[in-house]
Image 1 (tube, rainbow, N blue to C red):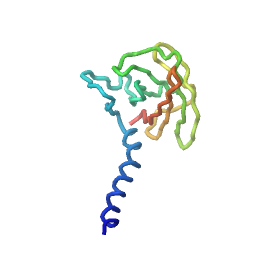
Image 2 (image 1 turned 180 degrees about the vertical axis):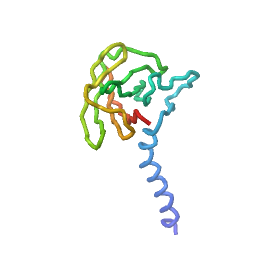
Image 3 (image 1 turned 30 degrees about the horizontal axis):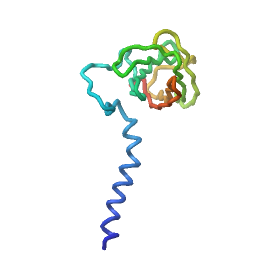
Image 4 (image 1 turned 90 degrees about the vertical axis):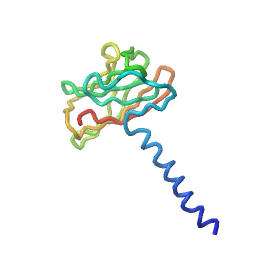
Length: 141
């Protein structure tokens, strides 16, 4: 009798653990230990994601992908020592991209990208101390 009672519970626990990574990546969550009394929505009209202790906002501009790096309070910061790269799916074609710094907190990946709702990106931010954090982006809604 006891195994029959535990089966639904073990299924629920397994389901919760399997969904946790997906739910953690969906949207802009602030469960990192401090309160926020400020607005740090997308300053450039793109998709803003929390990536580790930082924020990245991704936009398409003049055929290039532009990522803006800000601190946890939404303030622009130097991208020196940071790395950003990943995969972009656009028009059914997958491209590997690497971003280069182009000004304070502005990183650019060259290409011929079009702002369209089917554009998706999975980017990895590597911090100066070697930590890597990943986020999913859809810059055009």
